[in-house]
Image (spheres, rainbow, N blue to C red):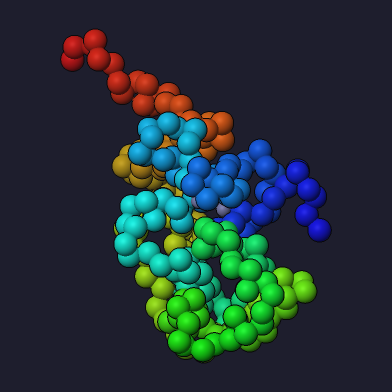
Length: 223
Ligand SMILES: [Zn+2]
Ligand SMILES: [Zn+2]
């Protein structure tokens, strides 16, 4: 069981984290981890955060159906697994809204009939409901076909796409690395330090300027 008040589950990524690392979405009023939230650009207030589901709805309100978040999640999971168990609370987080009461009370709400709008969310994603447990409040989805998961986000440079592979050891004779290599490596280390510093700073709800950025911005200085 999750310790009440100390830790909570992020409604989007599902990680259980200390509540101090979580924020409440201004729109759906649920708790999310800071990685799954963005500042509400409409208000310009850096402490007003939106969960990614709500942010997406704000940006493209028309193309978003209520259960799209669930379908997107299943498509994503489908790249790695064929069975996904989700608690009702987790689904609430994924859709950024409350499941209707009938989902809690009536098992037929979860049947795979394609005539229902909500059912289409998982059917179109290539998944079917395999098991529902109303008493414990979870549902098990089974993948029935592959639907490619496409992100609308442009691929970010910071994303880690490949597992870490160590540099192969080549010759026994030590070679002096080129200056370009050294400076590239040095820049990379600096970058990592900066990212780490930024991540530490952003926990408080704002991102302080790094030493490097401060150095860059000198409005009164003439070259
Ligand atoms: Zn999260
Ligand atoms: Zn939200």
